[in-house]
Length: 239
Image 1: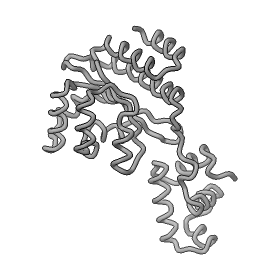
Image 2 (image 1 turned 90 degrees about the vertical axis):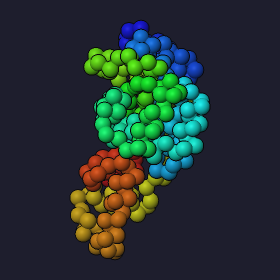
Image 3 (image 1 turned 30 degrees about the horizontal axis):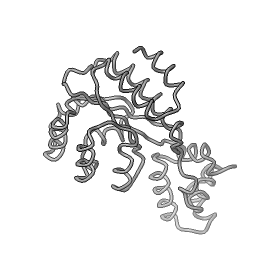
């Protein structure tokens, strides 16, 4: 199936089951037989486990074991998907010197027919991050640049279409930031420094630093300009 045909066919679907089946048919041309789509923007283990397989056809026995053993804490595919911005192959991971618990996860996966694969990070507006892993029962699935590029486009289209069909809320929750955190961001957007903000709202400079650190964590950013941009885009602040 050509990429254009896949995109056209996906656009006509309104069922998650049909979407899942069409994607599997598309993957087969590249030697892949299974996949899992997960939302990765979470903090707790329970949230990570619950959202690891929002749409998947991985073997149920493997999913149950994966969650029971809390492999999400050590799974190198999951971990790389949370930090990477580009597709990657499992071979890139297994070629490294891995810790024992990490090597164990990759070795056990093969017992459930997950021998080789690719990982695709998908970052949506608001820096909400999803990850999709595809795998093959055989080690000969395609990992060449042409195949990865096509699969990357298909994966992004699959993810956004799934979210629309399933009514999955991919935006940042409107109550994610506290009132004080919103106030700090508004002051930053107005051009005030951290010291200015501390004096303006009557708190210590160290308190402002803690507010900023909390904002960075919640919005998945690492500087104030990015935090302001995300906040404006999600209507957290207006000025």
